[in-house]
Length: 73
Image 1 (cartoon, rainbow, N blue to C red):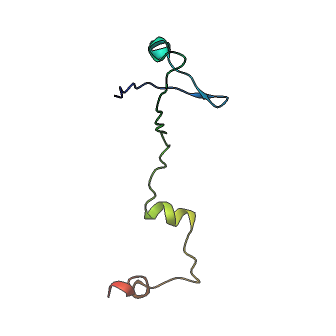
Image 2 (image 1 turned 60 degrees about the vertical axis):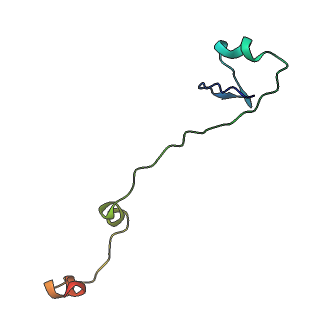
């Protein structure tokens, strides 16, 4: 039978530190199963304005209204 324990920890030199709360419960010679969940940093989603700011559309000269909106006519 498996019991689940949950706690936050950091990896130091390749080792996961067990919190003091669970050190005695786990003991030294226990066989345990470890599941690691990594919290990933999520970058904000880019919208069309961000994309155009990073990659502006190059045009030669000035466009007329008909040329600008030709795809919608």
